Length: 129
Figure (tube, rainbow, N blue to C red):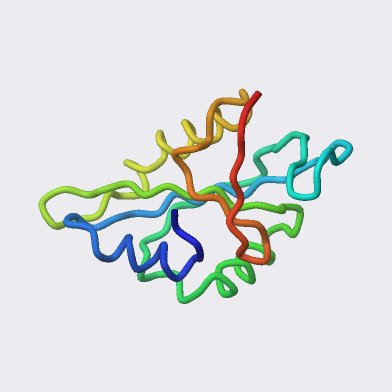
C-alpha cells in the first residue's frame, strides 16, 4: 500500500510507460462514529483533474492549487493511467477514465483500486457496503 503522496509520485515515475495521474477531489459526510478509526458516511465528487506526475511538486502544492478553485473537499482519490510507446496519455484520453472514477464514486462502487488520501496526506481505506 502506498503510504504517502511522494511515494505515489515515485511509483508513477518508475513505471515502464509514462503515466498521467487522475485526481478526483471529494467531500465526505460522516454519520455517527461506531469505532475510533471506522466511520460510516457518504463521499460526493467535487472536481477532477488529470496531471503528469512531474507537474506536481508535492502534496501541499497540489492542495494549494486545488484550494484556489474550491476548498470544499476532504479527500483525494487517485489513479494512474499508462501511456504507450513512451508517450503519456493525453488529457482527452484521460477524460473517460475520470468520468468512470466519478461515476464509481457517485454510485457507491468499490474504490479499493484507488489510492485515497485526506487533506493531511493520511491514507484512507474506503469499504463499500
